[in-house]
Length: 496
Image 1 (cartoon, rainbow, N blue to C red):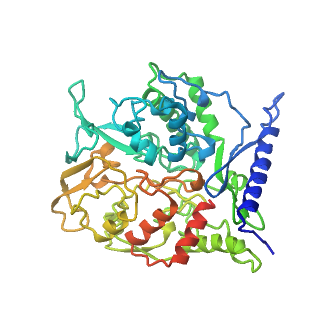
Image 2: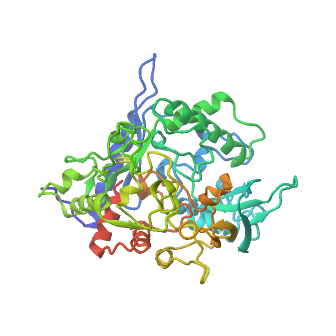
Image 3: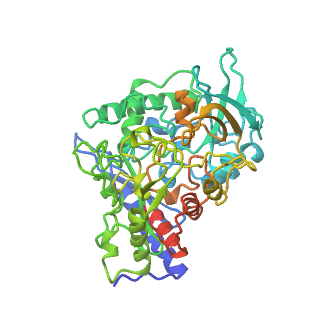
């Protein structure tokens, strides 16, 4: 029988043992010598529920370009992508760095590490969005041929719309979470709004070459933008960054209650993740798997053995039950741009689905083909402006940041008659790239592995924890989850 004591001291000792074992693996790994294959390295760190681990299949590379300051403000890629946060950035880590440096850490460079670029360095109020929600300011210029007009109705920091010094269209400030620089070989879209997907990631034959090309351009743009480099990084530096990133796999390794997550028949853990089968379109929810296989809603199978084990501990049974709910609990999907307004699907008012309808990549959790969606998290919470009561109820479950709010005019109602309508948003999403009304509020669903280490959640950091995230979905799609079912879903998500 698998027994897991809930005694806090025993839990702490087990966590320490787990971290020591995993960190010992990292310390034992050495760079290859004499042309020998690289020795994989594992880094492990405590997080809110246990231990997170990142596997580098190419061996340790602590001096590579990823860790070097290539710009003018002291930042490196590692400034916003740390192994202790599953190669992402947690709000808690940002707070600790602010306290340790008086706000002088390169993370808080005013260019985008403050609410507005004219912020006073070292002022917590000027960096509140980063400190409280882990948000980086993204400044995007309005598209020249936009089908809509955008006006500001709520500007809490004074830089929602800024003029182009060259006389062009204004720049729009949106605030987003840094995406993890790990598990990248499962991507179908680069960046939340897809703006770095220059070469499509939708065919197996071209996938890796296109992924390298896209990540290379993303590394260049991040260096000249976030790091304020006077010149782009060299080709060798870019290749070093991308090669390092593509060797990384991150996942939860240990749970304080359930113990080792890659144990007793489980297929979890970073080593299994590094060997997870993936190709563009695998298990596609819309039936576009190139092998012809139909969509299988049971996309998550990491802990199925625990669910079938009568001797599994209560903690392991909860994780397995949460996985089963994720795969099978019925959801009526309504008012989601990208699905319910999709002409190819007949614009259905409702779609019967599950969590894996939007997280179809097996044991990874993002879309295996590009499918940007609007689930409602960018909708405004100003009084009386959200017409969908289910979305309003979902937003009420979240710790929403105080973000600029924009009024969008000139777009047709995608779900009704098609007559022009006005609506409000805190982040136009892909529409700021394409200029298309049909792309408003739409963004990609992220890879779900390593969630426990990188709170808060959603693109705007609106879910402070996974309890809020589950409560949002429960209200947004009127799921009717019981308290026990919510607990199990959170346990599963924390184990990824």
